[in-house]
Length: 224
Image: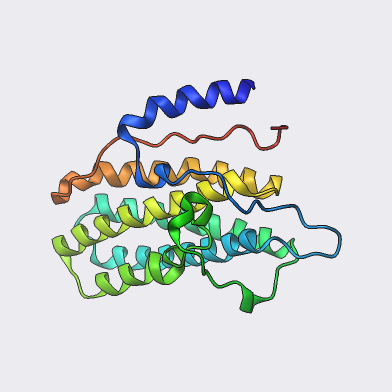
């Protein structure tokens, strides 16, 4: 009850500046349950580990592109910071995946549409690597200078909305305390990177709201 009393005022406070991903925070109609002895990790948790790792790999490539193509040191520095964020996330995701029994790889294909809101964020094909990073990488390979800077920031703003949605969904719905803790703590850094991108947007004539997005979850290490 105390957690509910804290969450409701927070949600009301951020409604005027609600973000796309925040609007998708809804109950999961098909809740995940902890695996029983001998069972693999729930498919949605395994999908999160796979898709989040793929996104972090894509960020490494975006960082390499920015190192050679960014028009100024400020953007190069921001791109390097984002790449560093995802290098660390990638390490953590590999460790988390290695410590768990995963379903067969051929079952880990996103299928569900976004009709379920945040509950569908992990299994939504639009949140897979091809929807989150590959298009941005292809677009940026042919750009230089100011054009590269504008496309990079626009692409990263779109990507970070999706990444926040992916991590928020995991934090909200996983029954795995360690995965929930990882998702929540990672959101702090991910949203700081998104805030920095929003601040950089004006430099390239991009209209991006400067407001942040509050993390809506309590401490996953404590009973809910």
